[in-house]
Image 1 (cartoon, rainbow, N blue to C red):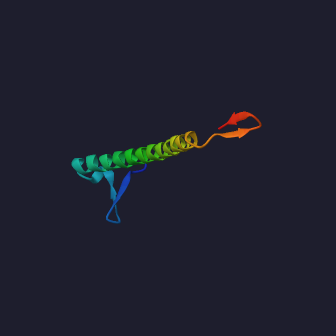
Image 2 (image 1 turned 135 degrees about the vertical axis):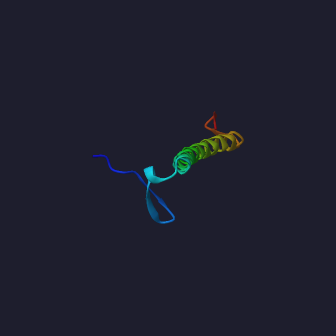
Image 3 (image 1 turned 90 degrees about the vertical axis):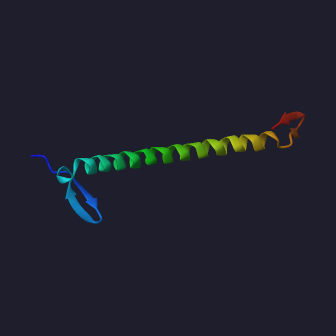
Length: 74
């Protein structure tokens, strides 16, 4: 026996199959958009880490070079 899919709209439970086809399509699209937003937020987080790494590399590349016992060290 399969359980009926429900959706909560304005704090009220509705059986998905009892909603108008157009409303079912809207519910599906909202779910897709939420998933896409989650993926995009993950990509933003990853890009921020990359941005920090590149920024650190840039800052380190312009730091004065120190000499240690005749060797040049960055």
